[in-house]
Length: 138
Image 1 (cartoon, rainbow, N blue to C red):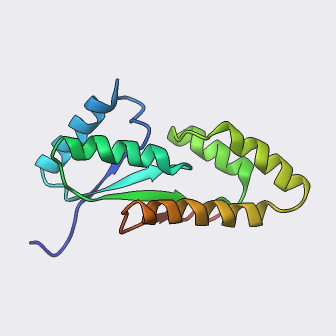
Image 2: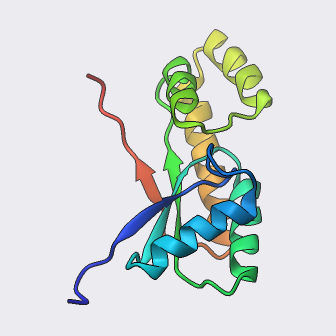
């Protein structure tokens, strides 16, 4: 029965229903205790939040892998709406730079640069797997 993994969700900026990071980590520990083997992180836009969570998580002695979630941005306005629905935090500077990139018809180039930078930071920080959220327009 060891030929598959059970992944559960994790949040880099604390689950919206958790009162603090300790409670969030305790919930994840419970999921692991009942059979989960790995965690997939909700998408995020800054590596620092992931690393803070990972470090706090590691201090508890839990060693299950956490796979960071990457959402490639194809449409900034839709991404903001989706992030709001999912409770993902968007840093204020992103709205400023996407406004300028849209004005200059450079949003695709900006998205590629931001994705590449985020993935590079994660890999440089010891991450071994990445999960890409791909959204298909309906």
